[in-house]
Image (cartoon, rainbow, N blue to C red; front, top):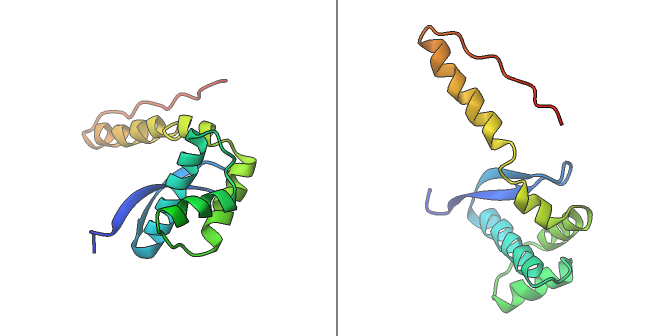
Length: 119
């Protein structure tokens, strides 16, 4: 059922990074609703709390499982949503470069060595 399947930036509660995850059904709706609520709160300069997320969800007439707003609130108590938005694609170039090396190796050419980036 691809109609209810979406790619969603989901916060990783352990690392605090955003990971793209294919989700479907009620889970997709709940995560997406909480993500949008957190973005709205951030955009309005309000604190991202479970109560504030629930207020937005209630105003939008959206029902989610009770653990979602608190999970998002806990994440954003530790991690800045602005940093997550800014760094959402930070690891993408590494994946693209790694994927681009495989065709060269398959064609008989030597795959270029990956360079380690120093900070």
